[in-house]
Image 1 (tube, one colour):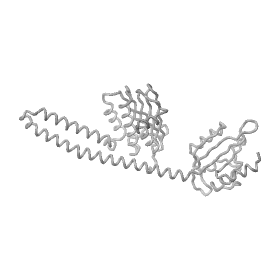
Image 2: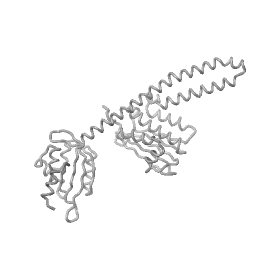
Image 3: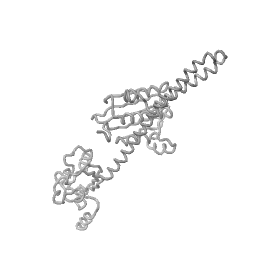
Image 4: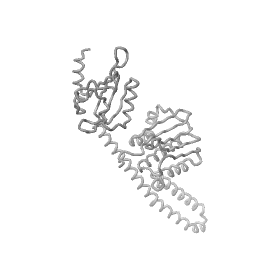
Length: 348
């Protein structure tokens, strides 16, 4: 191939390209194109012979760096996202694709890196995520207000009606209509319990006062009473977490338990909320020994059956920049795992 043509083509490319020598110590840069110079602010003369790590400056604690090191050692391609810095010190997000270039002896002579500045896309995505989190917080605030109204207003009015019924009991006894009174009293008592359950489902007051551990334990005791046996573990985490994290974890557990009660036919349920080994993550695991389902097709099945519960869980986790996984098979139960950072986007 005519190398003059190749270099001319690379220099005219809109994509930033960097080539390193795979057979020299420390993989020095041997070529960068014009798009690289525009993206980074460095000229070709300033970067030739250097390792690409200088683009990270002192910001070395990045998962992408480990991905690149492993790919270079294994002579394979990889794709990762890096925080890089232009010559003027300005941060930009680099979506980097690295692949090996073969030599005549069957080995690898060079690595080619294709870079894309995705700073704007990241900023826009961050704004969308922030808007979505604000929407969730607004929904939770509305739920809290409605829960308070149900409990304080409707609940108290029903309790007052119950008192009036008891005051009227002698009149019913005198007329021989105690059966009608008992029926009315049972209906009012049932309505009081229903209103209380709806209020708690909308926004559990215990979450604000006692925290996540006590509230999840109360949820399991209430929803699984008389049903499957359950085990709950909460370890390696502080007593109180960020409010957004607490309500998100609670909602995921709530939805999991609802699905288990309605669909799983389980005999045992285990809920674990534990701290990660590095102290920066929360891991939530909900598993049961019920019917299970085809985990690989859960999105298709949920859409077909118009069930948004699993989608809602995954969306909450993604908005908090966590990871979500479902492991299930027919007859083998279900395991749902969510890993969330303890420090949430937007926290001071």
